[in-house]
Each structure stands twice: as C-alpha cells, then as structure tokens.
Length: 165
Image (cartoon, rainbow, N blue to C red; front, top):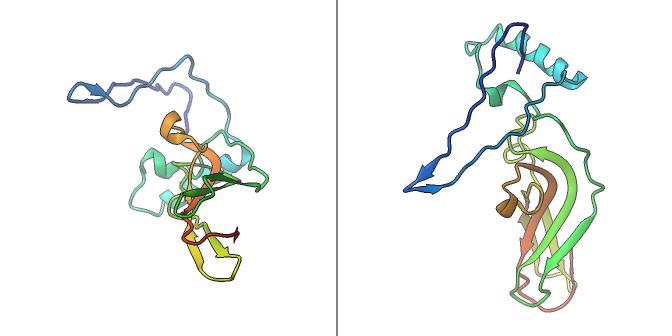
C-alpha cells in the first residue's frame, strides 16, 4: 500500500459469526509501518506504469502487491515422511521448500506453482504421480497460518514393500 504525507489509514475489525458462532477475530498490539524493500518498490513502479494503460486504475489490495511482505527465507529442500508405514494407511511427504503466502499473486501458491511427487514401488509397479499442495506452516488447520514453507503430498500405498519418491 502506498501512503503519502497526510493520508489517513483506518484499521478496524468486526467479529464475524454464523448463528452466534464466531469464526474470525483480529487483535492488534501494534501497527508498524516500514519502508518498502527494493523488490516491492520496483513492483509498485511497474504496476503504476501498467495501471495507467489499464481500465482498472484502482485494483483491489490483493492485486496491488505481487508478494505479501515481509518475506521469510526459503527452506533447504529437505523432505520428511510422516504417517503409519502400513498398506492402505496415509503417508505424508512434507517438503521444506520455498516460502509463500496465500495472498501472494506473483506467483500465487495455489494457481501458479505446480508440485507433484512420483511414488514408485520397489518392484517398479505401481507408479503414482500425486499432486501436492501448499501447506503453509504445516499446521494451518490448527494455527490458521497463511504463510510458510511446507509443501505436501499424500499416498496410501496399496502394496507392501519399499516405496521410492
């Protein structure tokens, strides 16, 4: 968001509910403003140039910024395997990879990044190509995390033995 001297920024929240059950909250201890980094400044300049030629001169906030700031470092690409290693039980492969935020739009971790894992039984067959997904911090169901470095794929092996990925 670009702010100029004298601009007023209003921040508020409303607890949303369905049938009296709250499903969102916002609590702030502070609101911090910091100068944009070089990549953000460059992206803003490009968007200003592009917006002068487009019909939509006032894009939504999600369309304005290519990447949500601040960024965290990418992980080292290590892989962990979780779950019970039994036939027909779900096995989870977690890749510690690139940092992403669910509101990033260049690239969007849901539509612009493809991740798949090929699982192959030691005999060579069967062989499955399983689509993966962005899993934020790996515990988003509990933490409501919107960002992280975890990418996951699941397999329920249908054959006993060693599986390679």
